[in-house]
Structure formats: C-alpha cells, structure tokens
Image 1 (tube, helix red, strand yellow):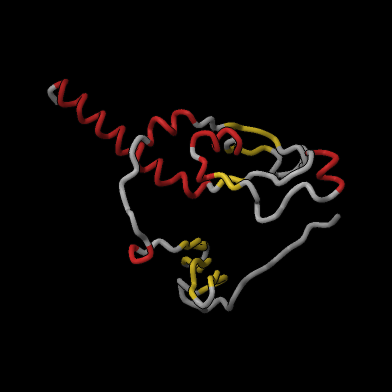
Image 2 (cartoon, helix red, strand yellow):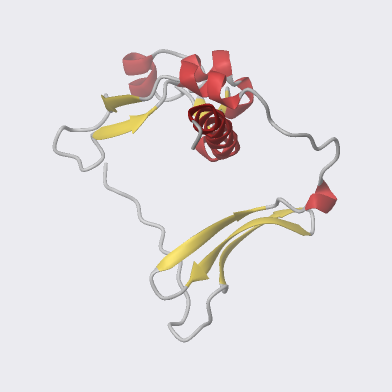
Length: 158
C-alpha cells in the first residue's frame, strides 16, 4: 500500500499558541496541539488542580524504575531500510507488571483484525504504553537520588 499523509497547518502569520488540534470531552477542551514559535509544537493535556481530587506525592519511584527494562529493538513489520526500523522503548507486557496504569490493553481498538496482522502477530488487541506518564516517576526518582546524594555529602562533611 501507499503511505498516508495528514497535513495540519495554518497561515504563517499567526501567533505562538495558535491551535492546530483541539480535543474535546463534550464541550470542554481536554487537550490540544498548539504552535510554539516558528519551528515547534506543544502537546497539551489537562492538568489543572481544579480537576483533581485525592492528590498525594508519588513514592518509591526509583525502585520501580530500576525494575523497568529499557530496550533497543527493530520493528517486525518494517523494512530494514525504513527510517523507523530501529527504535527504543519498553515492552508493554513487562511494564504492565510494574506500572499497570501506564499500559493500555486496547490501543484505541487497534488489534490483529486484518488477515496480515493475524497471520504475522496473532489475534487480540495490541498493548500500548503511555510514555508521557513515566515523567512523574522520573521526576520523583531524581528527587530520591538528590536526597541520597545530600545524605552522602553530609556524611562526607561536604
């Protein structure tokens, strides 16, 4: 098959912050993709404090992250000459054991529905990873490491 292309743009004289895409739940915007200067975009997700209850600090992030296995791999369905053939990431099934909230069992309804996918990869839905949700754990792990460094510096008299 041929490649598909979806092009989204606007006039070149619009200001930073102009919307490319808005995502709605009912009549409320819950996310967007906006212009950032002349050469970048911002991916925005709702995070306002007014939308949240039961807020508490994350703990134990370093121990969890140390159990995550980062991997380099090649995609089975891509040609070795494809620019996306070599990639990095994690294995969804492995991450699900450590941080189940970051793994989606139904990737937007995309599964092994076509004959090609069934024949080459089996039946069922493919798992996906919400990599964005790793960021709070990474921030917390850096804070944990900083505390450990401060304790060691104190012990060394620095």
